[in-house]
Image (cartoon, rainbow, N blue to C red):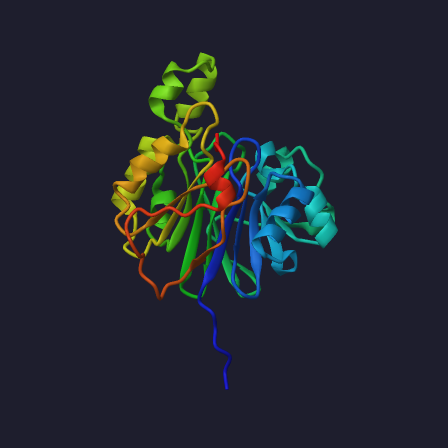
Length: 283
């Protein structure tokens, strides 16, 4: 008798923000981390709190070279002998040392098999040497990581349409950025189409291109100084229909969400937080 395959993916944001980014995606057998911008120790602690087993993690995928995405990679990869998937351009510009035998190169749009998972990297617009985002699949279930994107380019739109769940950047409120204390050059860097996605841009992507099968949207990489989680939640919930809206924290992990192709999104606009998340002022 053939084994029954679990079509579900389990996902969590272990941390999301300019202080560090790390996203977990896995099924019952295998998992990957997209970026490790928090320490090895903190990654272990947060996974343990969630009941996630580090032994299931089979690879780390690096989106680009910025410190908040790579600072924890060398120690975690070396300790668990994890292959690190990274482009030639990103590797040439990264400021951490990755063990040579753990380095694996990837090219855009070429499928990478990690155990029972499939990972497709695709290029995006960001102020880095060779930035990529990722679509992770287990059989027919697809989860996308769409952070650090200046605009919702064709690649982002194409892959977002396929998702049963997505980590989507909603970095800044346009008025808060314009009227805030950042110097002009930094405001321009954030909003010039190679920086980050605003709340308005993220919402437009969600409204125009979400699939009816999109059950969970984890809004990610919120700015500490130029955004407000309550504002983001209010903005998206009114358009959520049956998609569950979650705000990722820059201080702690989200809960683990089960993503399945068999289940349509449930009720409109509900967001679940852990008890700790409910008590924290997230930003």
